[in-house]
Amino acid sequence: HRLFDRGLAYVGTDYRSNTLWDEYIKYEESLQAWSNLAVVYTRILEHPIQQLDRYFNCLKELTATRSLSEILTAEETSMYCLTVENSAQVLDGEAHPNDVEKTAEPEVSSSTEAEDKAKYVSIREELFRKAKEYESKIFNFEQAIRRPYFHVKPLDKPELENWHSYLDFIEKEEDINKYLDEASFVMGY
Image 1: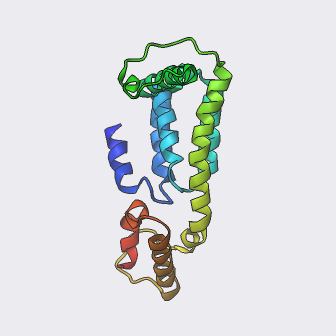
Image 2: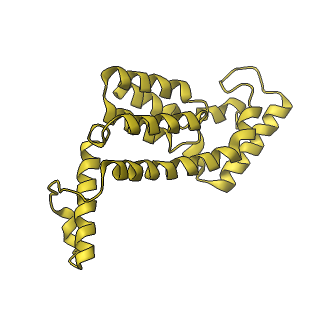
């Protein structure tokens, strides 16, 4: 895990990082670590990268073929139990700010596994939707990049202009540090 996390810390948000993400997915699949795999898919859906639709479909397939207990992490399971417990208290008018700190005991939920899976997917679908929306804004910039790697040869004028336009767009749209990585240094900006 650490090796992948280290690599993804550097390039995981890059539009063309899908190859590294694919290797991480293969690794988790080989271990049959389904909750880790679900976390990887969730992390992917937070970023506007290539093949986002494929990753979302794979997450939906994983959710459909595995039980919720297999794909939830321990933290998600305890948070889910707290949410169920707190929701019940709010309905009874008994919610208190300190109740979140209580250790949650698993409760029998009135919702079915299918309903819980639908909630699980819908939360990730919102991440997917936001990333997809941002991807649609950057798609043309990304497609105009012909050399996404560092090279000593200077960029040609159209590609340099694309980089300037792309960086201007990112500065206006979002926190520049969130989306820029070493690829922005290709043009020497």
